[in-house]
Amino acid sequence: MRWVRGLTFAAISVLIFSGWFVATRFTVTHQQLSIWDLTALRFGAGAVLLAPVLFKQRLPAKAWLEGLLYAVLWGAPFTLLVATGLKLTTAAQASSMVPALMPVLAGLLGWLATKQRPAGSTIWCYLAILFGLIALVISRPGVDGGNDPLGYGALVLAALTWAVYSVRFRSSRLSALQSAALICFWSAVIFVPVYVGWNLSRLSQASPQEIVFQLVYQGVLMSGVALFAYNRAIALLGAGAAAAMMALVPVLATLLAVPVLGETPSLLGVAAIAVIAIGVAFAARRPRPVLVLETASKAH
Image (cartoon, rainbow, N blue to C red):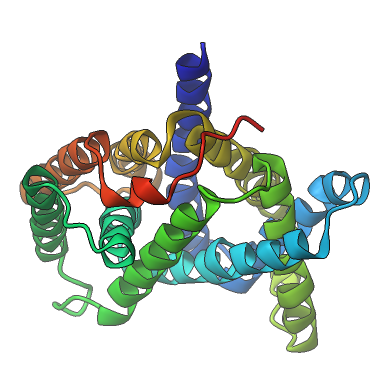
């Protein structure tokens, strides 16, 4: 029953994440809202939605500080990095690079932390993922005939912050809902004043329909439902199985990008995405040193 519940939470997070890559790229390339607007809507709405979780419970000061670290790793900075990558690459590339690199980087972090070398099969899976990512980058030159290093750099950095968050959360005493609420709270406290003070808003130029859609998707689904579901998947299944489910994100995002964005991947791109998904799934199924850091499974 625990396994079924874990898979259900993982599936929910995968579906929302897949749609988020496509919806965010559509907005930053076709609509009036900017990257700053999406970040403000996401964490502003999320902070309001999840405020009761924080203020109906007396969290210790240590929990608030831990939440601040999580917000730096998987809050507003992560969203800004992915949105930048999405603007400069494609939905297929961004949705492949970030979820695929995350378990690879988490595995390397575990290797450094425990000084235990991963199994040879795991290393081969990591290499397959990296070769797949290289092929994916080659498959789509940028509009000027080359690839945009800034976009790819932003995606790699986003994957790194997600990996550190995943490793840290496994030993956290916070529940899935508390973590999501703290991420939204601190992101809103830090980012919204900058957003308002520097006059970064373009909300007045966007249609009400666009604002409402992004408010619901970014603020409710991503900041609330997806964050909670992903944290619960880690707690119920472990980080390895949760990462395996994330391998489905590039597949679904690529399929959605065809009708929504008109981005049809090349044959090389399709093959690269398949290699990446298989590599992530197999790497996540095998024991990795990172799991040594894991405390007893949490069932918050």
